[in-house]
Image (cartoon, rainbow, N blue to C red):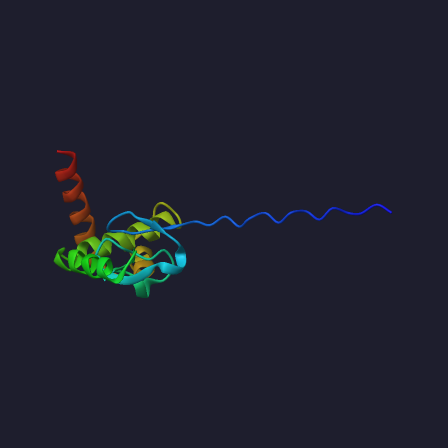
Length: 128
């Protein structure tokens, strides 16, 4: 009788990892990862990881360099607050009263105002 042909298995697509320091690509299993302090990082779903950035390196030595580089950067608390506000504003209604924004970010009104002032000043400096 007729034989059914078995469909050849499609090879799985392998997405390589990218070293955050040297931009070398390598297999996922070789990745060396760690968290570094970064005031611009607000985790999309887990506020306990706000202020931490997950970095990927091709080796332990490059992870150490990344940690050193991030360690030299200033940690600006207003930048972290602005990132928290941005996360809330992009995940729900575009306009929120101050009390709801405070509840959703975990910040109080003076901190929100400082974050907005920091953000506006930074934009002025970047836009000339």
